[in-house]
Length: 147
Image (cartoon, rainbow, N blue to C red; front, side, top):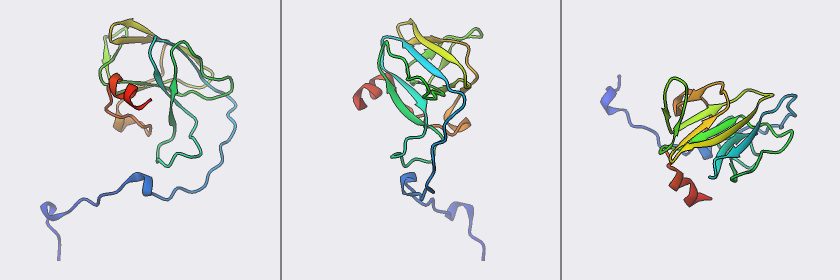
């Protein structure tokens, strides 16, 4: 007997409940580095933290204003909050998004107006379903509430 599509029930799953095989953080031969010149806290994507239970490829970290990520620590990109825009040559890009940079890149993120950022040439801007990174639908105010 076949089920009807409207009769299918979604199984409620907390992704933190998934069993994640043990892994080893391998040293990267190339690493990226972010310089935060926004005057705001910036969420950057870096190496998977050993204590994090998510299924994502990276972990989000807080980079305070005026600070630079450590040498040898692979910063893959940064989070663009839902109430911020990224100024691009082809026009503004509205968050929430992840802005990705390849290894060997040293990139800067700075303010370009009240609610907009500019950055060095990126290697892609991704919506939540386009990359396996944690991209929440948070405004900058939401981020401040969690720091």
